Image (cartoon, rainbow, N blue to C red):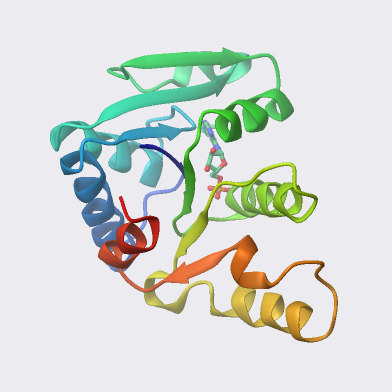
Length: 174
Ligand SMILES: CC(C)=CCNc1ncnc2c1ncn2[C@@H]1O[C@H](COP(=O)(O)O)[C@@H](O)[C@H]1O
């Protein structure tokens, strides 16, 4: 399975990095491919290191301007002209999207894929690994949208939440 991961480009403490590393190990040991931003920065780099160490494949999708900061050792590196093309390429190559803890870049990416799903233009699973309840605020907001008629499809068809890395794979049945 090609699993596209959105996550922080910052190095984070153990509360966040340990579950991310565990998720990466399960991905690699499961013989899956990590499709990600192709960077060695922060959690993105840690994820790639752990996937590779566990025997998984790495496909990085980078923008031209950040190419020089790319992860060394990816099995495949795709270079796009701009961020919009990059997001489209990440989605196109994914059999599923997994969202780990992250900031505005991660929010931008997950919002786009959920919006595409809303309009029926993307139909792959989107699973959020809700480490330490990091996404409880987002979840509350989305559930309110769902309950009060802001979504055309049930929320669970658009995005789901998992508490542990193992639960992410159980949801993906991967
Ligand atoms: C020094 C520098 C500009 C490094 C950043 N290098 C990056 N290379 C590739 N993808 C990135 C980078 N920064 C952010 N992203 C994208 O935005 C997300 C992380 O942004 P954030 O830390 O959540 O907000 C990632 O899922 C990734 O796809």
